[in-house]
Image (cartoon, rainbow, N blue to C red):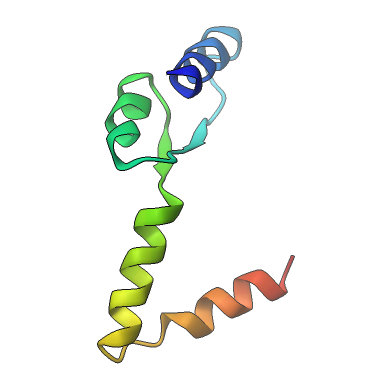
Length: 71
């Protein structure tokens, strides 16, 4: 609820700003979208998808390594 309030406040203060929010729980994704976040990222869902794809032979782990190295 606090994250959604933050998104709503940011939207009110800066209506043309792109707002990206992180959802700690799967249920919060829709709440943050309804609060007008332009993009919502769920680290736990993203991690789960990467684990499954890696287990099935896809090599997105290399992409993640490159992203982390560029920081």
